[in-house]
Image (cartoon, rainbow, N blue to C red):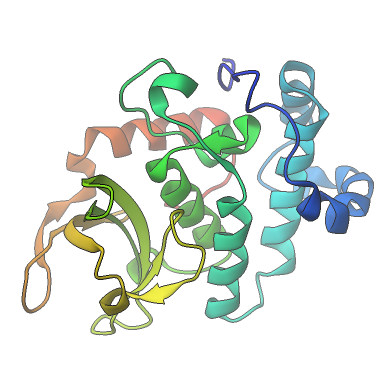
Length: 231
Protein backbone atom coordinates (compact mmCIF):
# COMPACT_ATOMS: atom_id res chain seq x y z
CA UNK A 1 0.00 0.00 0.00
CA UNK A 2 1.23 3.56 -0.57
CA UNK A 3 2.80 5.05 2.51
CA UNK A 4 0.89 8.31 2.17
CA UNK A 5 -0.31 11.09 -0.03
CA UNK A 6 2.54 13.58 0.26
CA UNK A 7 1.52 17.24 -0.13
CA UNK A 8 3.77 19.15 -2.50
CA UNK A 9 4.63 21.67 0.20
CA UNK A 10 6.04 19.03 2.54
CA UNK A 11 7.76 16.53 0.30
CA UNK A 12 10.84 18.62 -0.35
CA UNK A 13 14.10 19.04 1.51
CA UNK A 14 14.85 18.08 5.07
CA UNK A 15 16.52 21.10 6.74
CA UNK A 16 19.91 21.53 5.06
CA UNK A 17 21.66 22.16 8.36
CA UNK A 18 21.00 18.51 9.27
CA UNK A 19 21.62 17.11 5.79
CA UNK A 20 24.99 18.86 5.55
CA UNK A 21 26.49 16.96 8.44
CA UNK A 22 25.05 13.57 7.55
CA UNK A 23 24.71 13.41 3.77
CA UNK A 24 28.02 11.57 3.43
CA UNK A 25 26.55 8.74 5.48
CA UNK A 26 23.85 7.96 2.94
CA UNK A 27 25.85 6.07 0.34
CA UNK A 28 27.68 3.97 2.93
CA UNK A 29 24.46 3.17 4.78
CA UNK A 30 22.57 2.00 1.70
CA UNK A 31 24.92 -0.95 1.28
CA UNK A 32 23.73 -2.46 4.56
CA UNK A 33 20.30 -0.88 5.01
CA UNK A 34 18.77 -4.33 5.47
CA UNK A 35 20.40 -4.42 8.91
CA UNK A 36 18.11 -1.55 9.93
CA UNK A 37 14.31 -1.43 10.29
CA UNK A 38 13.68 -0.45 6.66
CA UNK A 39 14.61 -2.82 3.84
CA UNK A 40 16.30 -1.72 0.62
CA UNK A 41 13.17 -2.76 -1.25
CA UNK A 42 11.02 -0.39 0.80
CA UNK A 43 13.62 2.38 0.55
CA UNK A 44 13.57 2.05 -3.23
CA UNK A 45 9.78 2.22 -3.26
CA UNK A 46 9.81 5.33 -1.09
CA UNK A 47 12.34 6.98 -3.38
CA UNK A 48 10.29 6.14 -6.47
CA UNK A 49 7.05 7.46 -4.97
CA UNK A 50 8.30 10.39 -2.88
CA UNK A 51 11.78 11.32 -4.09
CA UNK A 52 15.36 11.07 -2.95
CA UNK A 53 15.01 13.39 0.04
CA UNK A 54 12.39 11.10 1.58
CA UNK A 55 14.84 8.22 1.29
CA UNK A 56 17.65 10.29 2.77
CA UNK A 57 15.56 11.21 5.81
CA UNK A 58 14.91 7.54 6.54
CA UNK A 59 18.55 6.53 6.09
CA UNK A 60 19.63 9.35 8.42
CA UNK A 61 16.99 8.22 10.94
CA UNK A 62 18.38 4.69 10.83
CA UNK A 63 21.91 6.01 11.32
CA UNK A 64 20.75 8.10 14.28
CA UNK A 65 19.28 4.97 15.88
CA UNK A 66 22.37 2.87 15.22
CA UNK A 67 24.98 5.42 16.30
CA UNK A 68 23.25 6.32 19.58
CA UNK A 69 22.15 2.91 20.88
CA UNK A 70 24.97 2.90 23.43
CA UNK A 71 24.54 6.53 24.50
CA UNK A 72 23.08 7.40 27.88
CA UNK A 73 19.32 7.98 27.99
CA UNK A 74 19.54 11.76 28.25
CA UNK A 75 21.66 11.89 25.09
CA UNK A 76 19.14 9.65 23.32
CA UNK A 77 16.28 11.92 24.35
CA UNK A 78 18.14 14.99 23.12
CA UNK A 79 19.15 13.69 19.70
CA UNK A 80 15.72 12.22 18.98
CA UNK A 81 13.87 15.33 20.14
CA UNK A 82 16.08 17.60 18.02
CA UNK A 83 15.82 15.33 14.98
CA UNK A 84 12.04 15.23 14.81
CA UNK A 85 11.48 18.83 15.89
CA UNK A 86 13.19 19.96 12.70
CA UNK A 87 10.32 18.54 10.65
CA UNK A 88 7.41 20.63 9.45
CA UNK A 89 4.20 20.96 11.43
CA UNK A 90 1.11 20.07 9.38
CA UNK A 91 -2.53 19.56 10.33
CA UNK A 92 -4.07 16.15 9.68
CA UNK A 93 -6.72 17.63 7.41
CA UNK A 94 -4.03 19.14 5.17
CA UNK A 95 -1.72 16.13 5.26
CA UNK A 96 -4.19 13.27 5.24
CA UNK A 97 -7.59 14.75 4.44
CA UNK A 98 -8.80 13.54 7.86
CA UNK A 99 -9.58 15.37 11.08
CA UNK A 100 -7.58 12.98 13.26
CA UNK A 101 -4.92 10.62 11.93
CA UNK A 102 -1.95 9.17 13.82
CA UNK A 103 0.95 8.58 11.44
CA UNK A 104 3.68 5.99 11.79
CA UNK A 105 7.28 7.20 12.12
CA UNK A 106 7.93 6.03 8.56
CA UNK A 107 4.97 8.03 7.26
CA UNK A 108 6.13 11.14 9.08
CA UNK A 109 9.65 10.76 7.72
CA UNK A 110 8.38 10.22 4.20
CA UNK A 111 6.19 13.33 4.29
CA UNK A 112 8.60 15.45 6.39
CA UNK A 113 5.60 16.65 8.38
CA UNK A 114 3.02 15.88 11.03
CA UNK A 115 1.09 17.21 14.00
CA UNK A 116 1.70 16.87 17.75
CA UNK A 117 0.61 13.22 17.91
CA UNK A 118 2.94 12.33 15.04
CA UNK A 119 5.96 14.00 16.67
CA UNK A 120 5.27 12.20 19.95
CA UNK A 121 4.66 8.81 18.34
CA UNK A 122 7.80 9.08 16.19
CA UNK A 123 9.93 10.00 19.21
CA UNK A 124 8.44 7.19 21.30
CA UNK A 125 9.08 4.44 18.75
CA UNK A 126 12.55 5.74 17.88
CA UNK A 127 13.57 5.76 21.53
CA UNK A 128 12.09 2.27 21.97
CA UNK A 129 14.25 1.13 19.04
CA UNK A 130 17.25 2.71 20.75
CA UNK A 131 16.64 0.58 23.84
CA UNK A 132 14.63 2.75 26.23
CA UNK A 133 11.94 0.56 27.84
CA UNK A 134 8.28 1.42 27.36
CA UNK A 135 7.91 1.62 31.15
CA UNK A 136 10.07 4.77 31.12
CA UNK A 137 7.93 6.64 28.57
CA UNK A 138 4.37 7.80 28.07
CA UNK A 139 2.53 9.54 25.28
CA UNK A 140 0.77 12.24 27.27
CA UNK A 141 -2.32 14.19 26.27
CA UNK A 142 -2.36 17.67 27.77
CA UNK A 143 -4.23 20.92 27.43
CA UNK A 144 -1.87 23.55 26.02
CA UNK A 145 -3.02 26.67 27.87
CA UNK A 146 -1.38 29.18 25.55
CA UNK A 147 -3.03 27.57 22.53
CA UNK A 148 -6.22 26.70 24.42
CA UNK A 149 -6.35 23.31 22.76
CA UNK A 150 -5.55 19.64 23.20
CA UNK A 151 -1.93 18.69 22.60
CA UNK A 152 0.30 15.63 22.90
CA UNK A 153 3.86 15.38 24.24
CA UNK A 154 6.21 12.53 25.07
CA UNK A 155 7.18 12.20 28.74
CA UNK A 156 10.20 10.30 30.07
CA UNK A 157 10.49 8.89 33.60
CA UNK A 158 13.99 7.98 34.82
CA UNK A 159 12.29 6.02 37.62
CA UNK A 160 8.63 5.21 38.40
CA UNK A 161 8.38 7.97 41.03
CA UNK A 162 10.60 10.50 39.21
CA UNK A 163 9.34 13.79 37.86
CA UNK A 164 9.06 13.31 34.10
CA UNK A 165 10.91 15.16 31.38
CA UNK A 166 8.78 16.62 28.58
CA UNK A 167 9.66 16.26 24.89
CA UNK A 168 7.49 18.72 22.98
CA UNK A 169 7.43 19.89 19.38
CA UNK A 170 6.36 23.37 20.58
CA UNK A 171 9.43 23.86 22.79
CA UNK A 172 12.82 22.56 21.66
CA UNK A 173 14.36 22.38 25.14
CA UNK A 174 13.58 19.25 27.13
CA UNK A 175 12.24 20.41 30.50
CA UNK A 176 11.00 18.85 33.71
CA UNK A 177 7.21 18.75 33.89
CA UNK A 178 6.97 21.25 36.75
CA UNK A 179 8.57 23.90 34.52
CA UNK A 180 5.82 23.46 31.92
CA UNK A 181 3.11 25.47 33.64
CA UNK A 182 1.52 25.95 30.22
CA UNK A 183 0.56 22.26 30.04
CA UNK A 184 -2.21 20.55 32.03
CA UNK A 185 -2.05 16.75 31.92
CA UNK A 186 -5.20 14.84 30.97
CA UNK A 187 -4.21 11.21 30.37
CA UNK A 188 -1.19 9.19 29.24
CA UNK A 189 -0.34 5.79 27.79
CA UNK A 190 2.47 3.65 26.43
CA UNK A 191 2.68 0.33 24.63
CA UNK A 192 0.78 -1.50 27.35
CA UNK A 193 -0.93 0.76 29.87
CA UNK A 194 -3.24 3.75 30.24
CA UNK A 195 -3.35 6.33 33.06
CA UNK A 196 -5.70 9.14 34.02
CA UNK A 197 -3.95 12.26 35.31
CA UNK A 198 -4.61 13.33 38.90
CA UNK A 199 -4.01 16.78 40.30
CA UNK A 200 -2.16 15.40 43.30
CA UNK A 201 -0.33 12.17 43.84
CA UNK A 202 0.45 9.56 41.24
CA UNK A 203 -1.63 9.08 38.12
CA UNK A 204 -4.45 6.54 38.26
CA UNK A 205 -3.95 3.38 36.22
CA UNK A 206 -7.19 2.76 34.34
CA UNK A 207 -6.39 -0.16 32.07
CA UNK A 208 -4.55 -1.19 28.93
CA UNK A 209 -3.63 1.09 26.05
CA UNK A 210 -5.31 -1.36 23.69
CA UNK A 211 -8.54 0.46 24.55
CA UNK A 212 -7.35 3.38 22.40
CA UNK A 213 -8.51 2.82 18.82
CA UNK A 214 -6.08 5.32 17.25
CA UNK A 215 -3.17 3.62 19.02
CA UNK A 216 -4.23 0.22 17.72
CA UNK A 217 -4.56 1.66 14.21
CA UNK A 218 -1.03 3.06 14.18
CA UNK A 219 0.35 -0.22 15.56
CA UNK A 220 -1.42 -2.07 12.74
CA UNK A 221 0.10 0.25 10.12
CA UNK A 222 3.59 -0.24 11.58
CA UNK A 223 3.05 -3.99 11.31
CA UNK A 224 1.93 -3.55 7.70
CA UNK A 225 5.15 -1.65 6.96
CA UNK A 226 7.07 -4.72 8.18
CA UNK A 227 9.71 -2.76 10.03
CA UNK A 228 11.00 -3.76 13.44
CA UNK A 229 9.74 -1.23 15.97
CA UNK A 230 9.13 -2.51 19.51
CA UNK A 231 6.03 -1.15 21.22
